[in-house]
Amino acid sequence: MSLTQKAVDWEGMAQRLQWPTEHFIDGGFVRSSSPERFDTINPATGEALARLPVGTEADVDLAVKAARRAFEDGRWRNRPIAERKAILLRAADLIEARREEFALIEALEVGKAVTNAHAEIAMSMDWLRYYAEAIDKVYGAVAPSDGSLFALNLIEPRGVCGAIVPWNFPLANAVMKAAPALAAGNTMVLKPSEVASLSALRLAELLIEAGLPAGVLNVVTGLGRSVGSAIARHADIDLLTFTGSTATGRALMEYAGQSNGKPLMLECGGKSPQIVCADMADELERLAGHIVHDAFWNQGQWCSARTRLIVASEIHDDVVEAVAAVAKTLTPGEPLDPDSRFGTISTQAQFDKILGYVATGKREGATTVLDGAAGSPCALSLAPTIFSDVSPDMTIARQEIFGPVLSVMRADNLDDAIAKANDTEYGLSATVWTHNAPVAFRMARSLRAGRVAVRTSVDAKGSTGIALGAEPCGASGFGVEKGLDGLRAYCRLRAVELY
Ligand code: NAD
Image (tube, rainbow, N blue to C red; front, side):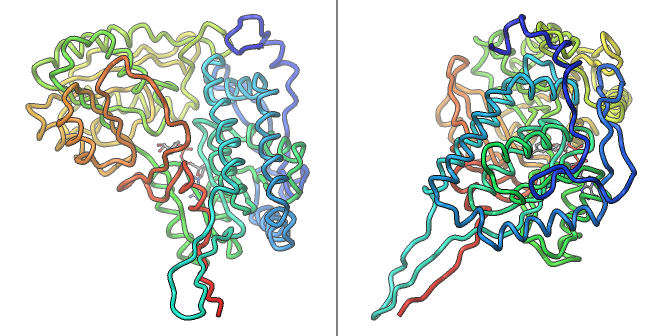
């Protein structure tokens, strides 16, 4: 049954859900070394969904030892390629078969509108399938050499990977780490966010069902300062891959340096720009739909949210009016209502932080175009807020808010637009709208971001899916994600000389 069909009894399914309540280590659920527990809270109701263990250094160590054994004895990396592929493909099929359950978990844990959650579940399946097929597409090379020498580059798995992920796309964030790392032959210890740990535990269980050997993917639940830092500081982890805030990413660099100097891959925060050039004047109404989607998808809680809208002065007022008209239609709903398209904010702390930024925007002199009403229908519901007359030095133009708040700036000309877009420490994504080909090419090269979308038509559609790898810039991190290079990122290059 499709997720968009109303016939799904979400409330009934929610009543029947069985929540995992332990770490997942060496192929099964394992009791924590500490009795301490934390609650996973449903943001729509404030009620506890599950009580999960506050993992300890000892739990992380147990998981690392299991992952190390699974790596060293070759039970995964030396298994025939066809079998490894089949296991990852089967895992994707199992997610597909349980997509409603995963969508429901996301809605309950982070307040996503359940109907919207299907996009994330589909993305997770795509990642598993892509990297399953990539297993035999990435290989080394033979270099030119003199005499009777064969000079080879082999690519090999790195070993035990640590992965630490955030809460905004709980299943996808876990799969985006596990799929390429496992496809490359590594094993993994994964720490989901304390806000949303349940999808990762389900994923680990489901991978075993798909045939993944025990110990290859281990999940330890708990807090960043204990479990996260124990993973980052562990001396027997060969690579640390992280998605989350820039502040945490920087702390992880210290932990890695203080322990075994493990290499890092960091996908951190963003403050992404969206530039609208004056030649888009004829298409503003339809363009507004794209702008609203890019700024407010997932209640603005996504790393690449285009939260700085930079508009050519000539069309500035019309764009603001059109965008506000569409944004007004994004009415927050109950996450389990199939008609909802806009869920709740995921935690009380995030909700308070967003409202703090809205107050700061007003205090610093931005014009409130749309004031997102808060608290209905759920206590953590928050409708979109739009500020215009934002200057690049204002707090709301500089800091990542991670909520439904859009800051609009004017640009006097192209140089000004580029300067404003690049006036940020971040560099995750950027979008430009123009019909003008030379401007499009210039923008593609001038904007400092890992992913730049130059859109020359409102009607143009398409997606590269996972195929196009990219690396963030500046405070947004480093290390390639997606594409075959995204698998290479989890490999070590070895030179072999054969005489
Ligand atoms: P966060 O940095 O607070 O937490 C992310 C993870 O790190 C969690 O599992 C947390 O427990 C752990 N952690 C926190 N402090 C730690 C510490 N001192 N040591 C070790 N681990 C620690 O981020 P968040 O609030 O969960 O997520 C929101 C952030 O994630 C935003 O900044 C957003 O931009 C970013 N994000 C980035 C991407 C991307 O692809 N670039 C994608 C999604 C989210």
